[in-house]
Length: 95
Image (cartoon, rainbow, N blue to C red):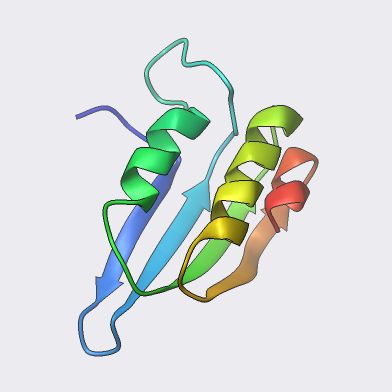
């Protein structure tokens, strides 16, 4: 399985998902460990319920981050964002 910079953790009791964003944000994948907004959208739509987003990222592509931000804004559940350690550059757009 290829490494992604996000990870879902499901809390069955509260019907809430936790999304952990670690690493760089990218519009294209070169080594298979970056995420594209298209891949992110597919996984975002694969579940339901409220979401808590934990961010620890040095940033990356601001246009990809803006797309991810818009996806989270349009998400039907509640979205809470928490900065774990760093939300620099493009990651601050998502935050």
